[in-house]
Amino acid sequence: PNWIHGTDHNPILDLALETNTFACSTGEGSRTYDEHGMLLDQEIANVASDVFWSIVADAFKYSNENDSSSAIPPDRSLKDFFVDELEEKEVEEADRKIVMQMAQLWGAFIGDPIERQSLKYFWLEECIDGENLFVASTYKAILDRVAQSAVAKATIHLSTKVTSVQSIEDAAADGPRVSVTAEKETLEYDEVVITSPLGCLKRGLPAISPSPCHEISRAITNISYGHLEKVFITFPAAFWDPSSVKATVTGSSDASEFPFFSHFLHPLYHPGNPESWNIELASLASVFPAETLHPTLLFYIHGPCATHITNLITSLDPTSPEYFSRLNSFFLPYYSRLPNFSAEAEVCNPTGILATDWQHDELAGYGSYTNFQISPPVAKGEEEVQLDKDIEALREGMPERGIWFAGEHTAPFVALGTVTGAYWAGEGVGRRIGVKYGLEEGDGEINGGEERGKVKVGKGVVIP
Image (cartoon, rainbow, N blue to C red; front, side, top):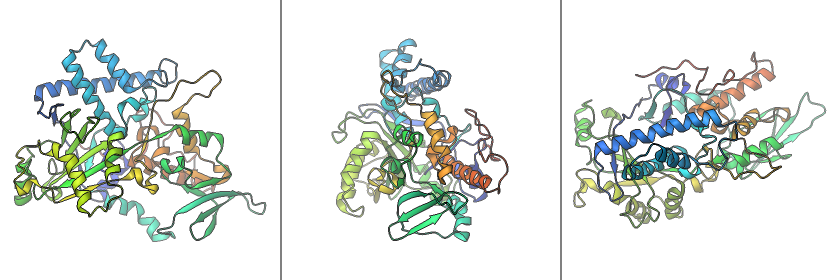
């Protein structure tokens, strides 16, 4: 993970402060390249960006106000809302085109194209209030702190894949027992918390016996799993941002001259990008203080574009020349448009490239994280998809069988698909199990009767 989503009462921010993890705002500026690879006039880009974000805000409001009614068909997408809003606002055709191209950038948030984003359940994408912070010094210290108690006190079976979880009725016991089968042994427990990614659950990993109840099975089927991937390309120095090179050498804390984000809209100039998928680039040499700067470009890709790129490399050794060549050939048409690029200059030639490949990773669930996609209209008598109820069902789990679920897919609504959500989900299940055994008071719910847009737990620190 790269981000802390929201600063208002966010326990991950508290942990970042406790562990001296550096996280900061990435600023509001960006560079935008048009479909011909030319840098878009900043004023035009700013206007289009303002329209884009205003429509996103309107879509959140509309979704919040109408999700429980039939006003929004289940197959109406966020893209449909954009088309209607731009027509209603009477935006000029040229500007409308740019805004619709910018709208595709929403895919980098959810991991799939905007055409798949449900408008009815768009409100589930709302995050905790406050800024989104980039974790420049990585999550390592936070993960070490979170794991501290388990490492010190628990028995941990490393490199052990669980294949099945089975409920056992034991008349001699006070409650159900749960059998967990791994590759080499079977163990029994009073309670089992399944933290497998949603993508694993969708493929029956681990196998749950007897089969989950209807509500759980329906939830696993209905909730979608995204396809975000990342590609890191490192250079001898950040040729695109001379100020970062100076900061690395001198330790200067002066603000970078180059924005964190660059957007390449519907690129028509790259035959290796057959569908002209949008490309989003983040400069890890910008914004941050000198000690966390890297001469690295981080590309965010999603949906069919991510599938295309991972398919290019999944069979290759990441240290092989072919792996490097295939990725570099795809991204060269984008980073070569950055300032100061010269193909002959050594500083402009990558020294390393690494891509995630979660779509081919069994333990990642063959994807990234939860999102909320459109569904077909239901015929008379068929069960309507209700994603909020599905999430609540997964969050509830099957406590009567001693089986619980935790992860970003069972989080409070304002933290779904985030590290914070995964943290809260685990903490919530832990508390509920504690209540069951008389170790905790109350109902064990971590979100205190959750309200949309509000979270009632954690201290939190707001960074201005």
